Amino acid sequence: MILIVGAGVTGLSAANFLTHDDYLILDKEPEVGGYCRTIKQDGFVWDYSGHFFHFRDDKIKEYLLSRMDRTEIVEVAKSSKIYYKGTLVDFPFQKNIHQLPKEEFIECLYDLYFREKNDSPNFRDMLISRFGKAICEKFLIPYNEKVYACDLALLDKDAMGRFFPHADVGQIIRNFRYKDNASYNSTFTYARGGAFEYIKPLLQQLDPAKIALREELVEVDVGKKLAVTSRRTIRFDALVTTIPLPRFLKLARLEHDPSIYSYSKVAVFNLGFDKKGDTKNHWIYYPQKDISFYRIGYYDNIFGDARMSLYVEIGLKANAHVTRDLLLRVVLDDLRKVGVISDQELVSDSFVELDPAYVHINTACENDRKRQLQLLKTHDIYSIGRYGGWRYCSIEDNIIEAQQVAREL
Image (cartoon, rainbow, N blue to C red):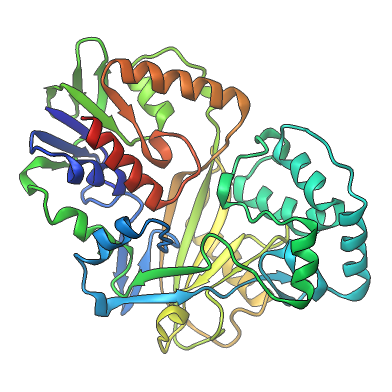
């Protein structure tokens, strides 16, 4: 029997691609979907965060969309901006420095050309080596410090992998004349019913009786292949876990240093207003330290809705504690400060805390992660997905990895 821990995208995908039905899916939550869940409230449709779907693999895209109502799917060409000193600059910042005031543009271009290259292994130094001090200090460093809620020197230079919008000097200068802000998410698809609509196709072939909700994994005996849950003890032949890797290592009583598995949390407010605001953009980045959030997104601009519908993301340290109502007041004040809201009235809101959100990838963590995953595999245990694999990846990446593991099983 294949025991799958976690009923999010990765866990459900693993069950989907198995060639047999001898499996059981566990999840401590009362519903499936993991972070890919949708809140419908007062006529607004919100996700736990901005989960838009960027497909590179046509087969995976078709696997999902062929099982969905295509009339409810929109294909969107992304419009994203950076709020900088009261104006909006096109994203990515490093390719659009020509949109800055003249003196700042010259400063960025000068530092870019005369940057000192280095082979430092950390993320902060990599940025400066690649783009120069001015570009980094104006956007790349303060923005990413808000996201990761840590000193970027603590992260490996490849912490974001393919998701970081790299550009060489030639590409940056070429963009002054011939606009090309292409990135991995230049276009995306989204369902009118929210991100949970992408979960439904993964449920179609699964037996509801084989999904146990409100059942939490509390202990694993790796050698005996026994899993103890909040309800029972289960013997398994193989185990696929998608819960955060350090949490699983603790449950399995495997020797590890928990301090090297650091991460940030993200507090998300979904906010519904009585009327429109911005009508053009899909999301905006905020590098300013005196602004509480690092990004906001407009659900209403994806669908052309008549009322402004936002998600607002605030990066937090793992041990941070927030008071919802107090933080909401701060967020609303900051939205007014940057001109997102003026005379709009808040008519509905919800709050979600993603814990963990962004994992901190560094050499010590990477070395131990690889060792632990290999050890687990020798016991027919596969720790996969964004948190099970403890890596930066997309929803599509999780589906592909789950498919590969299912084939092995």
